[in-house]
Image (cartoon, rainbow, N blue to C red; front, side, top):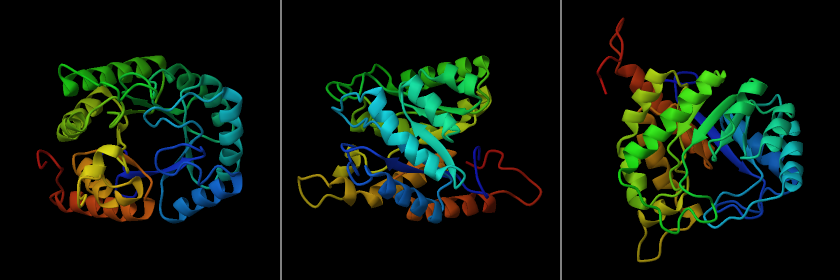
Length: 283
């Protein structure tokens, strides 16, 4: 499985240093609390910590560059050397400052920062989004969501590789300009993207479903959907599905249980390989 660490898929921990993120906004705005949470995720087994200073929840508005830098850079500097760091940003200035502070992966929901990744010699995640966070969930529509999203991602992958980015991940952008039906269709066809990404020379597929709104309907006792902190079971289920389909990395809020799940997926993958053989067509 592409992108594995210690025989299992990679687990990226979410560290939002924002006041308004959909799940944990406001909890880690202060530098010391953010660093404490980052170190806790390292102790829980996170392979990467993804630091973000601008919310991308539905309806979110942009943050000024100076404010995003103020939120992100001190936390990156404090965590540098403890774990691999990613920065969740769409801004070139923030991306370059984050790399200087220790980040080695640009997690880019805009799909535009590959020139920065190439120039700085770091990895890049290309995520698909229809619209912007401010309007992406107003009326998302596609003729063929799987075909359109996958074609767009593979085009970005090839463009980045041609530009000299050595480590390119792709992300279907679950919840970013997609209905629940779109999200489920993309997850159902994830193995196709995994195969196409590997064939095109990408590092792997990153999947982020953790605590997202569409999961709130699953397991809800009544008509009221579950809140973000009540979506652990659904988050784990979709993460395990993604890993079993070949995703090389999952982006999550709940690191410890996901690391356990990733380890079990890794063991199951190993058990499916005949001694002296290969996975072949075992999926």
